[in-house]
Image 1: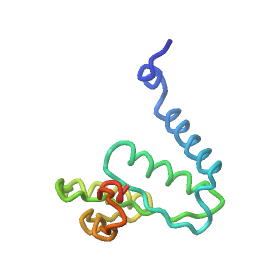
Image 2: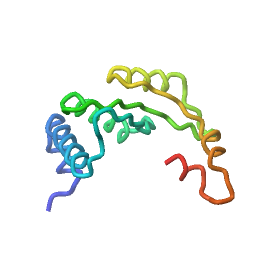
Image 3: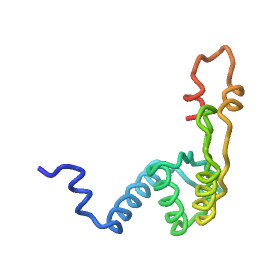
Image 4: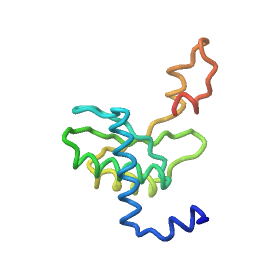
Length: 127
């Protein structure tokens, strides 16, 4: 039996990108996630998973028969500041893919739904 990590190591970067893109495209089609003219916010943490998602959706959007506008947003939790260097890197990454990049303040977001009808944490509201 081949371990998952070893299996991934045997794939070329190109093959791995193709497999991920096919999976995302298939899921988007099955669940009819996007329609022409949609505007979609992607949560961008700067981690590998969100960076891959931005890249894959950018490349898929170039091939789709419809156009979706994607926006990348980093939700600042308030206790961990995004360095200006990291922010610039994320802005460049997004702008190279035709997406705007915005930093959202979690404290402001949590105040929007800080009602007595829910006792959800701000983390849940942002996600």
